[in-house]
Length: 222
Image (cartoon, rainbow, N blue to C red; front, side, top):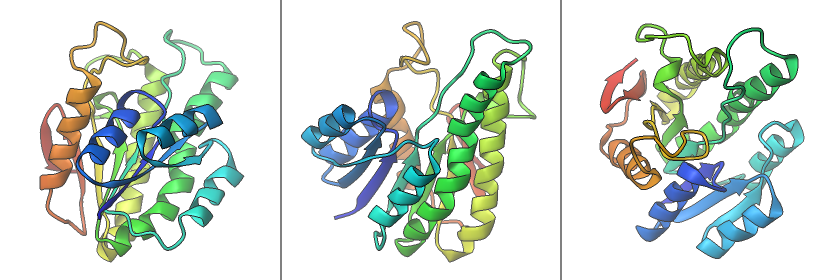
C-alpha cells in the first residue's frame, strides 16, 4: 500500500488531499496543529500527528515519529497569507509569514526528503504563481509573494541535495481556490485543485536533476 504524507491537513486543500488519497486506497499520514484537528483527521481514516511547523522541536519530533517510513508522496501544504494590505510590514507579520512558509520548509524538507528518497517518491510544496519572479504582473501581496519565492528557492536546494538520491521535487500553483485564504469568489473548488495536483503528480516521470513547477496547468522544468 503506497503512503502519502500531508503536512497541514486540518482543512481546505490539505484535508481534501488526504480524503482523496484515502478514497483511492492509500495509507495517509496527516498533520495538524491542534488535538481536535488531529482527532478529526483520525476519524477520517488517517494516521494523524500533532505538528506546529513554526516550532523547532515539533518539526524535529515529526522526523523521529516517522523514522524508517518510505513515502511515495509528500505534500507540504502548511502556509499563511499574512496581511492583506501592502506597504511597511510589521515585524510580527513578517515573522509569522516567513516562519510558516519558509523556515518550516527549510527544517522539514531535509528530514522528509530522506523518506521520499527511500521510495523514489515525489515531494511537492504548495507554492503559488505569485512567487514567480519572471511571470509577475503586479505587486499586490508583496510579503506573501516574497515568502513563496523563497519557498521555491528552498525546494530547488532540496532537489539539488536529494534529487540524485531518489526524490522528485515539484512546486505547485494550486490555482485560485475557494478556501479561507482564497475566498468565496475564487474560481475552483478544493476538490478540483486537489484532484488536479494529484493527477499531475502521478504522471510526472522521475527526474533526478530538475525541479518541476506547475503554474496554471503547465508543467515544466525550472
